[in-house]
Image 1 (tube, one colour):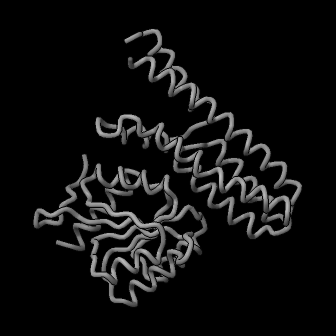
Image 2: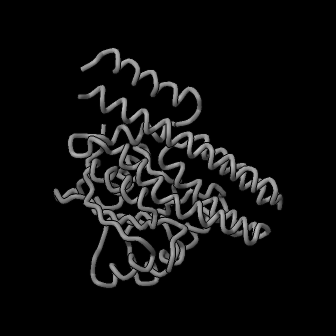
Image 3: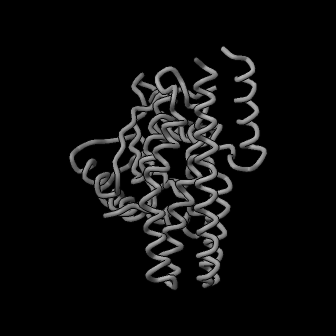
Length: 141
Length: 133
């Protein structure tokens, strides 16, 4: 095992928490890894992104076709917040909460703006986690 | 230290996970298997009701709120109307107390926030030991 690479992996992992991308729930997922499920965390993250695509499309369509239907938008985002919580996606969750606040306030422009930020956070987290998982794989070979 | 997940007769506690989110389904299955439960998963409240109608029984039902076809509170009311005595725990990402109360009014024994954590499962195990011993 490359000790230098292992150190880099550990540092990257720490930075994901320190910079607020991940929270305690990610650690809960890591604790569920075992010999039977060695890639459990990566599997769950992949499942999250695959499954979330449809919900993101629904929100996009709703914002485009009926941006004043705040009840529907809030409902979609409440679902998405729950899913984001399940992988410990902290910054994404924050954007979800902000979106819901704009729904409560009836602020369509705020919803649209926050949704763009949410998609950016999703993409950033995905890139960082893909890099992290790849480095972790290399460190373990 | 994990509590024993056996029901006292040596058999494992059985749990039905009712949730339409494939991520939650997978997490909860692995979590509960790790704690020694016998786990089955269905995707909505109607499937849960149909399962009980077919004669299946579970010590514990973890019931999501938002699901297609039949949501959690409705499924809970139906199961209680049918005479199901299993421990039913609402699992919700909703953070408003009034909504958690609605789950309890529907007949659930408790309501917890998603996602499941080690502390939640440990607490549920303790409640199961109390109920079934």
